[in-house]
Structures are given as structure tokens and as C-alpha cells.
Image (cartoon, rainbow, N blue to C red; front, side):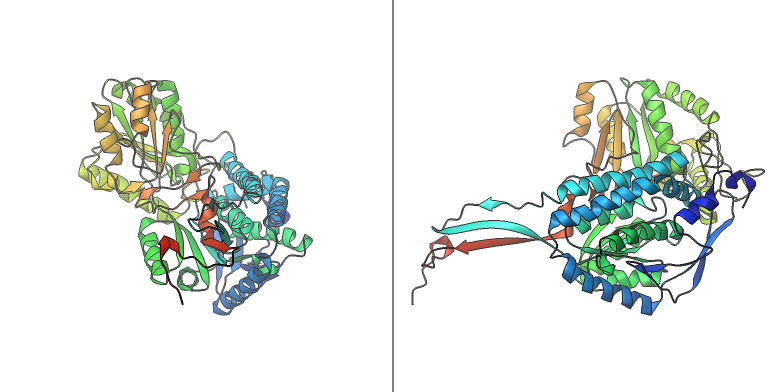
Length: 516
């Protein structure tokens, strides 16, 4: 490990989180076992090996499922507020481990330290939210048409919830699902990305402390660090009531079909191709800040990253020139150094994808006003650092219609707001969107039925950086799933309608007579 990274206390961080040189990637409530292959986690920050992980095999998978099934039978009977107390304690543990876990997220994934810490704060926030929801798992009471009858509906836990997450948010998305799944009475099995296994092991180590201190069933929380074959087992397993999948649209389409085929439930958080509309009435200073952070934050590897800027012709040149100037001031380097704005891409495959997108864009006619390149030399030894770039394009270009997980920003000019909204909506994805304007009529049109078709629509903030209080998710090829806040807890429960007859008669609904 380089002296530069040692200065940031990575070795101490790993020790504090229970990460060893050799780790077992399967855990169910404190029991660690793994019989699969060994994988190695390398940091995109400096290219160094962080640790090795023994992955889950077939027998490990069966042990986890059996443990989860047993735990569910006990956990569902614990009152919801008591389950909320468990989640509250997890939130307290995350406060205790925030600096260490945030630093590990930054080092293993490559996002800035501030973003790593922010991701852990999201975990804390969703725990707080879930604790409140644990006392509000409500149904409705309805008036019956039959005398002496009472009708109401209630919600029951589903059972085992399988969570498959991506590398770009290696801890937060797990917490969005688990905190709500647990207070609803479910147990969870987490299959994290193979690109960030240590973050998952660290989270499980923290949760194991909570389970042990409360003498709770081991199978409430399990982690399976494994390859795609074990992930497929989880998707196809009838014993897993719900699959929450975060990843590409291509894989999500297969997950959706397989889960639906067995009549399971799924939550899909797939690709985004997010745009900010900058109108003639926009605050340009605010617009530049929102656009730049949205485009280069996490090196463009957020599902909510800003991919397209749709700019009114009257301010197009001003916005373009100021963007070029802002990009010239970006500092690219070690994300643990808080003076840097942009860290590395996750791995060599991501770098190749970045290069191919630039090549394809140029072939289609994209005019790059800030050129992209792979950075080399001191501080860039991992080979994963790239220069954020900007291109003038047409929305119809094939490369613009696709999501590229890299810091490539496309500029598109428009004349009328109706045209801008049409451009914004004219992509297969529908996750996040934003408009920058000080004109109330423009803002309201953007939010109306004739406006954005995305699951998230913002006014005077960017596309990136959602709060946990609102439901998170998108439409079209983004999958239609919702996670995090609002009434999303209902996704993790099954609805049941109950009718109680407290009379000595048996009248039928709709006035039907059936006399014997």
C-alpha cells in the first residue's frame, strides 16, 4: 500500500471493520463460512490489493436459505416496534462506524470521501425513518354493506427478501431495503457486487453485533459474496418472496422475467439517462453547480448522474463556456484527498466503456468541446482515472440514447420548453430529471402531466442526490421500482382484506340470497 494511502489510515479502518487479509464472504448472523472460489478486491484508487474473499458455494447458499427460513418464523412474531428497536440500534452502530465505513466505501469503490461518508449517512437516515414507520404499519377500515360486519385490511411480512446490489452504492442500497424489510417482519439475504465485497462484509459485521447483543436469530441478516450463478439461484428460488435488484437494464429485464415466471415480487432499480433543462430564466450560477456535480460526482457512476444538458438557445453559449471553464478547474485524483473533485472509475472494464462511448459519439457526429482521456503518471497508477468530457450532440444519436457509466456530458440546444421536455422524455430510461428556472409557469409545466415522465422530477436542483424521505425509483426501462421513503414499506408486505361478522346471521354481499 502506498504511503499516500497509508496516511489516510486505511489499514486501521480495515481492522476496525473486521476486514482481514483473508475473509469469508458468507455470513448469517455471525456464522462465517464459504466454500467457493477466492476473489481479490483491488482498489481503483491506487491499484493495490485490499484483501481476499472466499466466496459462497452451493452448500453455503443452502445453509443461508435454511437459516433465513428458520429465522423468519420467529422474527415475524416480534412486534413491529420491537423490530424497529433493532433497526434503531443498527443506526447507532453506523454512527459509531461512520468514518471507517465511509472511508472503506471511498477506497474500495473510488468515490470521494465526502460521498462515502454521505452514503453512510443515508444508511443512518433510513434507519431513523424505518424506526418511525415501525409504529405506523397501518391498514384501512372500510364500512361494510352488510349489517353487523366490519371490514379492514392489514399487511403481513412476505418472508425472505433477496437484495442484489451494484458497486456504485455498495452500502446505502442494502440499507434502503433491509431497514424497511426488517421492520415489516422479513429476513434478508444480500448478494452484493463482486467489485465491492469488503463493503458488504463490513456491513454484515456491524449487523452481526446488533443480532448478538439482542440474542436475535442468526438468519435475520445474511450476506452471500458470490458469482452470478449464486445470484441466479437467488432470483429463481421460490422460497425468496421478493427480489430487489439494482443494476443494468439488460440484466434487470432477465431478473424481472424470471421472478415473474415463478409469481414472485420484484423491485427493479435499473438504468438512468438523466437530463437537466436549463431555461432562459434559469439562475446560471446554480445551474452550473448542479450540472457539474451531477455529471462528475462519483465519476459519473451514479444511476442519477446527469448525462444530458438541454439548454435554451438564448443562454446556450454562456452555459457552454462556463462549463468548459469549470471543467478546467476540476481536480482529479485520490478520492480520500478532499481537495480532489473526481476519483477513479471502478475498474478497467469501466475505462474501456468510457473510451468506446467517446469513440462511438465521435463517429456519430458528437463535437467534443472538452476532450476525454485516460490519465497516466504519478497518482494515476491504477489506470482507472479518466478526464470528464463534454460533447455537443443530437438527442437522436444512439450513444446518447444509452446510459454510459462514466463522466461524459452531452449538450443539446432547444427553442421552446415543450421541445425541451420532449427531448428529455425521448430516451428509453425514466429515472431522474430536473429543470433550472425562476419562472413559475415553466416549473409547473415541467411537473405537470405534460411534463417529465421520470420517477424523480426536480426544480432548481440537479438530478443527483435524493433524500431518503421520498420514494426513489423510475419509469420505463428504469424498471418502475421504488425504494427508501414515503409508503415504500408496502412493497415488503402482502395486503390482506379481512371481514368479520359479529352477528348470528350470514347475509351475503350484493344482496344474494342462499337459503337452505
